[in-house]
Image (cartoon, rainbow, N blue to C red; front, side, top):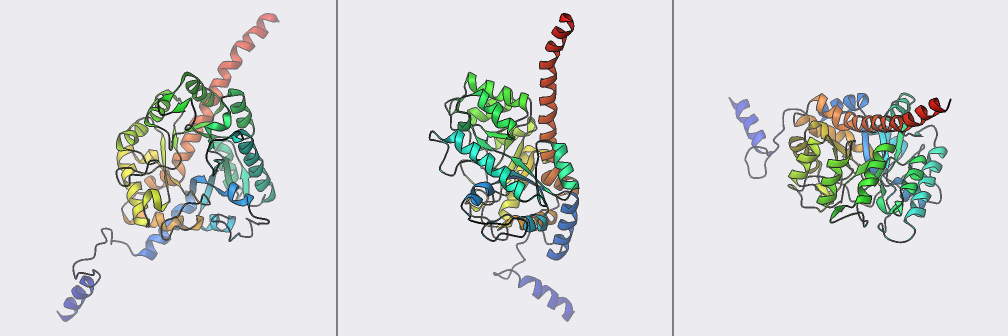
Length: 365
């Protein structure tokens, strides 16, 4: 009886006010959950939806991402420790989308992406398709997807969109231009989305107006991304999504990639997990992903300071009862689905374009 009383006393002392502990998920020891997280991520690595690494590296006189680089949040050793398999490298401009050099600055960043990858061939590989991501993983490389870039980079030209795609761009953010503004997509904006579908460039509506996001969801034949959006119901940040838009994103099989930033999700791992729970519940487990937003200038939650810390977040979700299937979709499967859909739609569109030419050639013959 004395031992039982001692156990009750010890449990009650966990809470500052003498009550029961306020942890709603106490069923698994932290070390056990972390070990499970590492095992799961070894099979289903993280597809990180937003990294500011290219811009961060521009200001360093020398760096070695394969050996390790303390001046940034992301390098190859930390990505391997965090089980990062895919990284979307942002081409956004820190000073904003305005100015006359948006196109030139985006081209310079694409050149920077290629230069960084060519300098680190043992750790990084530039990819364009879902299949190439699998190949990179099988070769022990982290796959790098260029994008998102800002819509201002197009300079209102579909030709520039095609050039950027030819150089590797895979994601474009639809905001801050005359054709993708507060009133939604103009006719030219709708044609941009159609051309993106034909090319296999994904639309990103993080930070876009509700009218633009809603029209993009209705128009696009491929899933729409939100590369850095959490739940506005939990934290009223302008880039976070209200529940009605999350529900629409889920119906359209889009993807909300929750950022690991204190400003958008909160200062702790639990805050981030709360947002992931909410997005999963409202949009569905097939419509939630992760966005590290490392090297973007953002402040990150405690214990999620760099790209090596993903297992700690997955351990928290395991303690909350997320299934292995749900977690495999969150970390890897949902991004693969979206990229495969974009690849398939682009191939189908290219086939339709080539078919009339082939018939004309046959008639001429």
